[in-house]
Length: 106
Image (tube, rainbow, N blue to C red; front, side, top):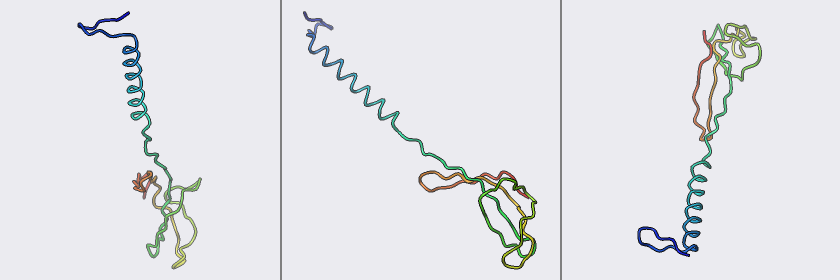
């Protein structure tokens, strides 16, 4: 038995072949669009400490209990007082580029 489409005769084998071709095409389009991985961003929080006497500064990872203005030891250069002057987040993606977002600063 044949079907006709605007005067074109289509046998069952041709209809099945067209349907499978369209299905495979749709599958590969969906796979290519959905299979793209988003760049995963890694977020890390950092604390900036500065010496009150000589302006020496050091960045370290945030520790629980950190806050801006907290006294945090002595300066390795001049034995002055180190205080936390900023807390911020750095976002890094797979390409190595980074961006910063300041949470708190003095």
